[in-house]
Amino acid sequence: MFNLAAPRALAWRLPTVLLGISGLRLERTRYRPVRLLLFGTMTALYYLMTPLLMPPAIATGYAAVVWLLYYGGLSLTLSGPGRTALIKRFGEDRAYALYEVALGLLFMNQGFAQAVVIYAYGGNIPDAIPTWVTCTAGAALMITGTFYKLWAASTTGLDTYYCRDMFLGRPLNDASELVVSGPYRHVRNPMYSVGNLPAYGWALWSRSLEGLAFAALFQAGIYLFYHLCERPFIQRTYLRLS
Image 1 (cartoon, rainbow, N blue to C red):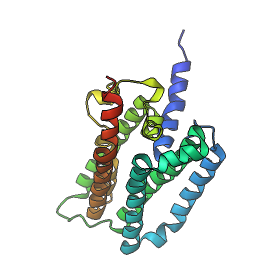
Image 2 (image 1 turned 30 degrees about the vertical axis):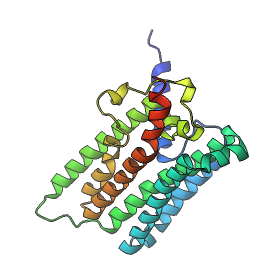
Image 3 (image 1 turned 45 degrees about the horizontal axis):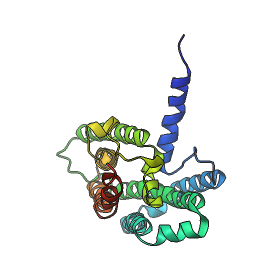
């Protein structure tokens, strides 16, 4: 007899992971009403405020602030005294919940910021490059990148995507080995490499040179975080145990 449990579980898991990497973790019960309210409010504000953010100077300023808050704030929280202060004040579970709600908002704004830049600077790729070329290449990058990011996040789990191990300062579930299955068999760091292709694809689709530049800037930011914060944590926490 055909087992419906697996397809049903997959049908629930993929949308949950997609929302999770976008900033909303529905599988987490703590602060769920707050998460939904913030996600809905931020989305509504984005669509209402987009016309006001369209001037290039404002769009660039917004993207720059988001870049600094995301990569600077994340690095200071996970590698500085931020996480220990939160844990001491609220306890591990509540502190992590507060941290991931804030990080989810930054995930949302990271996407919004790049979208605003693309809209503000759209349509300036030289006419010598046909529209069908940029649209085809953009669609291919968006599909490939989204697939790999979903695959990677499903393989590692959303707690890893939200750097829970770094926040707690120890491996999750007493794990002593790094993930080497799924997309990690083909790409060393699929979330940071292939997973960032949708931003380039969207910029190509919109024929935005500045959008491509900002996609590269945001990807450079995550690699900067990786080399300065995440990689040292992996080396001293996971590789030491292997």
